[in-house]
Length: 257
Image (cartoon, rainbow, N blue to C red):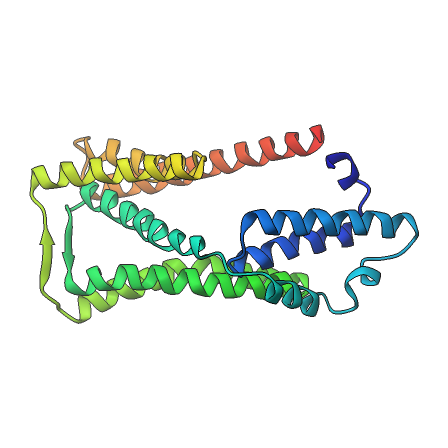
């Protein structure tokens, strides 16, 4: 099957990738999505051998074809289990960051706001993924949309922080030295657990990049301002190195295929 994939035109391959994204964002079962995509891939290969384009198989409206397939498939309720895992992962990021800085202290607004923001963002992203998978945008619109989607989590959580400062709700969770140590270990355990569950190192690598330099610098005797500058500088350089490494690795993998 892998050899046949290379015979597909860019148009057909793009459609298959978009279809996979659309069905995943619609909460369909992974096994069913894989079967449908592979079956459609075979049809497209045969069609292209006869000189026909993707439109001969799916019609001239990719969106309508995707919607039709999605409506014929049942919703995978197992997909709902992803929501608490995502909320738990975000909670671990916040928890570990707070233990390194001033210590864990949550107000009532934060306890309610953090999970709510996570769920809203996940649902919004799923809607946007479906839209992007079924709609052809210009290069400029794609870049703008990507920037907006990438900025949304920062904007939402910054908005929550500003709201927390503006509306003083009571502190419901405040940990001491021992509690912060336990919270840090709990956050690390969550990262490891999600990594084992998802079978990827992503949830371990990213927290390490984000928090390890800050933690090591916090142990030094530098002034507060110097620590802040060093933390941002090291984080910036580390992210660049990681992105370059990831890009080169992906490029080598693509050349190998």
